[in-house]
Image (cartoon, rainbow, N blue to C red; front, side, top):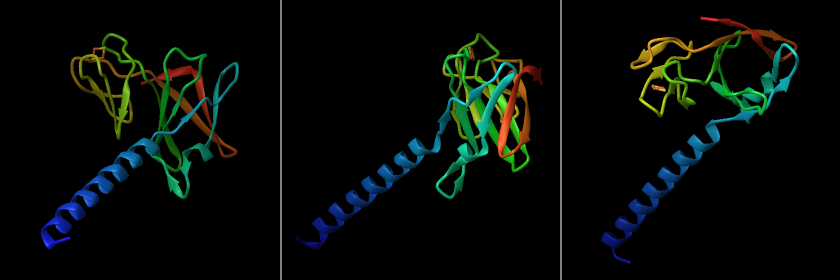
Length: 146
Ligand code: FES
């Protein structure tokens, strides 16, 4: 193998492996849980925010009893925001894109607090009260606030 071929194949292998690595990292970054449904809300273990020794910045609750998933952002060790992933524009299900929730229907964007950042949505997302106790988060589905 000559130098030119080695560099071509080496660069391709390097680019391919770094692309694959970043693709795998983005796949493993999203963590889903069903939580534990009670008559007042959902309990989620704080351990669900762990991925190995890494603390995740958000997790998603998907539960058959919920019409839409709930995204829980970890703002810091003592503050979390629980956002109903239904767009305030026309009700499409939102997707997480890092620290934003993005609507695939018409492009609205919302921040980690559920505030509308990009039109056409003008209203904020439904946000649930979150309480921390005994290594768990309690998402109170009865209390919605903005
Ligand atoms: S339904 Fe989300 S932007 Fe229109």
